[in-house]
Image (cartoon, rainbow, N blue to C red):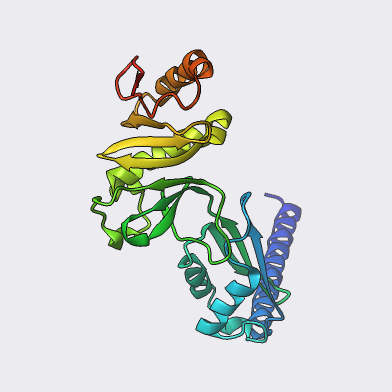
Length: 262
């Protein structure tokens, strides 16, 4: 290697060392300045996922204030972002939670609200939602989401300790899981979503009532739902539209390729 090339290589290496050292110095300096800076704003951004807010900005601020104090005015170094995230997560209203601080002295909380699929009324007056991921979630203190309702029979045994266990309903109760599967199918079909008024469980059978008659439709297990509802729609068109919507009290879809009425 020529002397000129060695000099150029050494100069280039020295330049990189200077650049890396400068970047490291400026980064440490910016970090220290950030830690010593006071928080001047708490910014809460909520994606309501198509529903009204389950909790308002003010309600979340008050919960944080009661647990860790007023965040605005705190030194950035003293703000526990993981604690903030944990407190918000315990509300059980959000599927995505991001908490971070900015170099300008802001603490930002970005939330995506969970999406309730069905409201379940349980024995003893308890009521909860099942969200679109199949997880139980509490009611909002602000409003009731406009979703399909589901009720249990009085003799159902349910372990209420699992309400906020944050595990799928299929691991909590087969009845809850069956309600979720039927509600999910109904929600994904515009016609049935408009027609079905309430899901019920009676003698371990799934059933529902509708807005277009006083009959109960017995589904049985939530299997072959597309086939069952195709038969029901055909029965509506060929029978009930001719005989009248109040002709039958019960329409049974439990048995494959059969519609039994009484």
